[in-house]
Length: 192
Image (tube, rainbow, N blue to C red; front, side, top):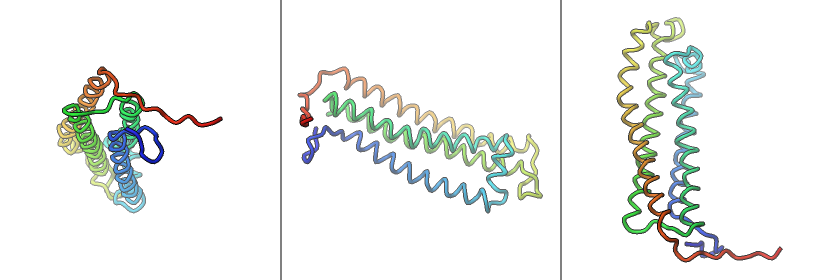
């Protein structure tokens, strides 16, 4: 496949993953704005929850995990598909298209679900641990644990969804990679 205007090789799956990365970027922007607002104006402030450590660290890990896996991981995956389809001339056709669809959907739903649940658990658990004088509930570690434990199964389940998506994407990629290439796309040679 090549772009009709430029003749450059294209990849429909790379384009789909880039679009997903753009959506993840918009979600990250909204999430960051929400967390920043609560860092300043929240009761208790999100900044206190993170600084308090403990349960609040789940919020930090979830946020950084989302940026790394949801936003950057999805964008980098687009390059993987571009390499296969555009540069190796091995497009996904027929039934093999099921694998990148499952990869795209399960990965994005799973990563977003797992990391946002971690953020929510960390915020709620961390807020509960903060003293009442700062807007928290003043809970002890045992009481905070009862909040956090409610999230663990859901976080694990959504992580499993993300991992299943990644696994199916790799299987599909390797199946297409192993078959013979279509006719090679010739790139125009520019005069030096």
